[in-house]
Each structure stands twice: as structure tokens, then as C-alpha cells.
Image 1 (tube, one colour):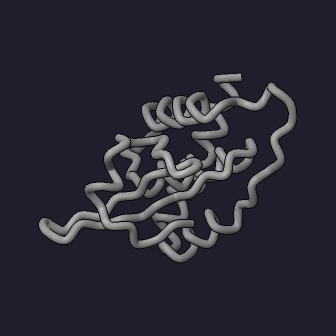
Image 2 (cartoon, helix red, strand yellow; image 1 turned 30 degrees about the horizontal axis):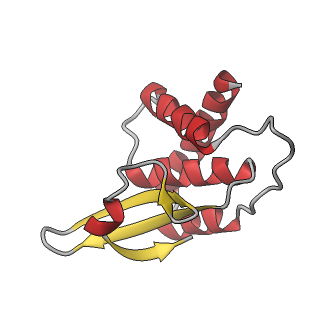
Image 3 (cartoon, one colour; image 1 turned 135 degrees about the vertical axis):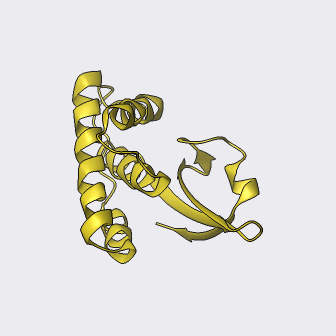
Length: 126
């Protein structure tokens, strides 16, 4: 199951990477927002940690550096496909200006440090 998850994660990274290169932030936002949460069937569905680990492995294998937006969009889509109600969160801090994206499931950060919401002011959830 892990290899299949890594392949699916890599595929999502590639799709979002293509959108980042040739599309717009609005298209990525719409893509993530449009991904419905699938119904979880049985105990064979991978847990949140397994999906996040698969995305981490896919990022390590990816041909280019993976930005937080790309990683978070791919993670959110994959989590939703396996029945987890994940949200991609985009935040910013003012001084020095930085923006960042991460994923939350049930209000808990799953693909970054747990204190990230304390550093960045949330701009958008999708």
C-alpha cells in the first residue's frame, strides 16, 4: 500500500506543479476546494500519518524542489480521496513578510510542526 500511496502522491505533486507553472493560485485553490471528501470504506483505508509519510517520500523523489503550497495541496487532495476531511490552510506573517501553507485534519496540523498556526495569521482555508 505504501508504494501505491507514494505513486499517487507523486502524481498529485506533478499535477499541482503543472498548475503552479502554467496556471494560477486561483486554479490551485479551486482544485483543492473542489475535491470532495470520499466516504471511508473499511479499515483498509490508510491513516493520516501514512498518507503524509507517502507525500514526504514523493517530495524526496520529486524532480524539483517542492514548495509548501504544492505539498499541502497534494496532501489535502490525497487525504480527501481516502475519506479524511482535510483543509489546506494558507497563512502569512507581516514582519518579515512570509507566507506558508499547511494541512489540518480536525483542527490539527498534520504535515508540519504543530505550532505553525501560532506563527502565521490564517488567510484562507480550503
